[in-house]
Image (cartoon, rainbow, N blue to C red):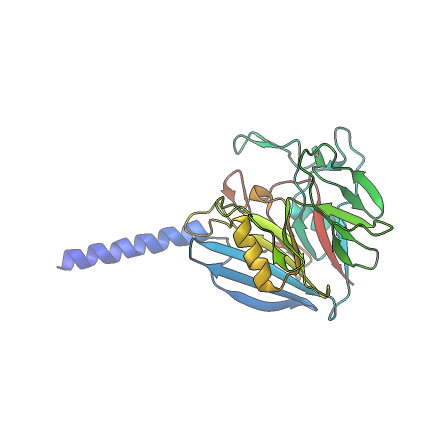
Length: 287
């Protein structure tokens, strides 16, 4: 019997040690809710059924703090309209305090961890309509499937698919999740992937930034679009739109030392914690 007890304890130790090595560097899979800046609350939501899912949520309360939203400005570059940047590079370069990845883009491929495009600095173009500080630099006309678009006024008001008279910032996404308080019918409920989304409540006071980790067995598999919509609905979103997901999904904040802090566990080319350079981003500047 002693050998059986020893084998059991050894097996448990190996499993525990293996999981610790596997999870090292990733956010702990435990629920969290804390105020991290004036007007900013961070939540980590952990679910195990029907599959593992870790969601990272930043709630921006415009009644408490003063915020400005921005979309990555155009670059002078041949072969595209932007230089690809990781979300951390975007946060540092433009001195924002919060950043998430934005729209899908082209060209893009990921054939292996060493054969991929873009690298940081390579020219890319967003899939959908895009504007930054009043300059429209992507029309989205090359996309056969029209994308929904988030518009941000100069006063920081967010609207979906209703452009203001003067467009200040605009960021397109993959699809609408919630429209007028109702979840969009027939959202995909089969494909589980990393996800990024943005939503607002009915009166626009709260903005919800959401990133779901995925493609990481025994940690977080991801979410379907239907599950993502349910999550936004539970948070209080009246309108919500998904952004680019998969290996692009990244959430970053500025740390106390001014350096970027990645809140989630991005997975580019199936390498956990590796950030993907993407075309554009949504940043939040805290006054």
